[in-house]
Length: 171
Image (tube, rainbow, N blue to C red; front, top):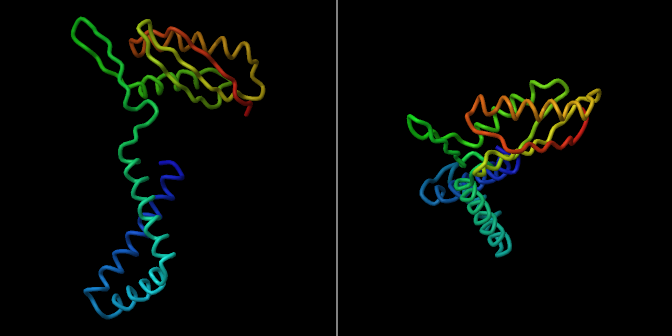
């Protein structure tokens, strides 16, 4: 979960709790009623604070709705491979996980981020690699490209058409 998602979820919990306490105070007396009345007096004292609370509720509600229908970059995409025994469906996220593990096995690779596109001739992969500070870049790129192009089809069954490698930083 991203940091923004966590913050919005926390705000939603606070808003729901506050509004629930205010609603509950209408029916229950005692400390809950006093706390709800105090919150109502503070938050709904003027039209400005009432408006701001309503806007916050609407924004949080819209963001939470968007969170529920959002899919990851490649989690929902499925690749299909037809074999003699039937069709095999594999998520792009699984292929990327395989490729990421293969790339990390190459000496000098610290971190790997990637994007994968599927075409009729095979997978097109773009790897963004954080290399070790002592890595020889041309050698590293050559090893990475051959490792992905040879091992990934053997492991996943999907051919790799192209591998583009961006060295983004040295760690």
